[in-house]
Image (cartoon, rainbow, N blue to C red; front, side, top):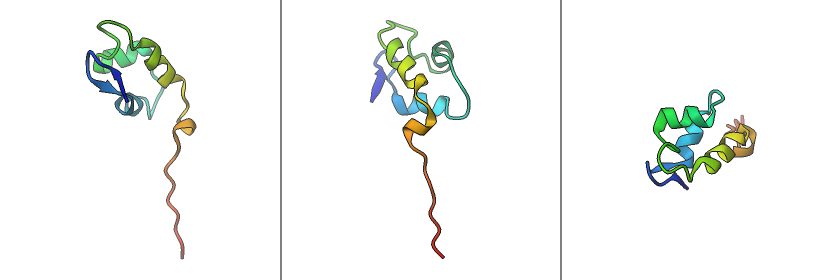
Amino acid sequence: MVVCHCKAVNAEFIRSLFAEKSFSVADVTEQCGAGGDCGRCLDAIECLLEQSPIDQGTQVAVVIS
């Protein structure tokens, strides 16, 4: 899903930015520019940042021996 049309930034890219640590909306804007032009995507970015990694699912490897 495209979050920022001005900078053509999608949700997966934003999620990848904060996969390892917490980010603020300002951090996302600094990293990729999303939210820095018209600002219409700021609410969507904030919603993405509020989601915990567990909400996004976790890849699991199943080993059968």
